[in-house]
Image: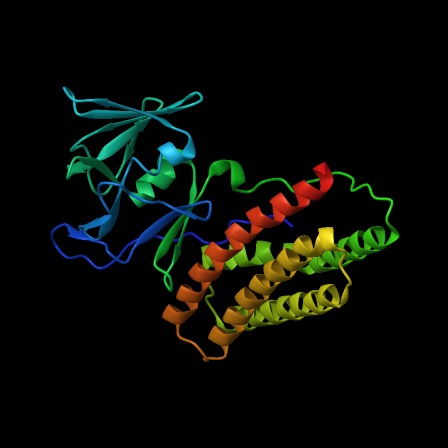
Length: 289
């Protein structure tokens, strides 16, 4: 399985004119909720500003503050991000990038729009409208190549399980890879005719059927104790693909509105990105074990 970028989400809430606390908003990095010590996220001009400390340091950046110039410098490896308080831009390795809300200091904390944090660090940001959690996925976890290797075992039941699971995954991927590529296309270009809508519904219906079939087959497998986690994660991953496809068919049939559809996709997108990381880690533990 490989995570495909399928959502381009804008993290925004209603504008209130002046800064106010975004009390319902939480931020997670790779699934771990950030505990902001001094300053919580705030909403300014319809954009959620996030304290740099608590985010960049959790992603392995060094943080340097120059009080005279009011400049923050973030460094990681060969990358340097420079932020001047009050400017409507930041600098990545000397190159200027515009931001819609200037960096600013609130209660002693340097604040930057979440989208700018994502762009500057090369991370993926997903917004879950149900839980009001913005999930930041580190660049080393975005579009990772699948874990490959050989699982060695002398146990016949383990061998039978991994061979069966591999066969099911391969069958599932024959539909899933094409569907995700197609979904990327319609997510970028839109659906502009009744014919295109019916094509999307058919593709989504086929994907849901393939996912549900694979889930049934995996559930029927008897997993040895050390393989129970990969079985569970595989089913949960495929269920999210099924839910995504189901949202498209529900939209096409009029069961849900466009807003409900987008909320579902953002929620599923967040969960799917995190589940991909969990799946990769589960596979890595088996191969390395």
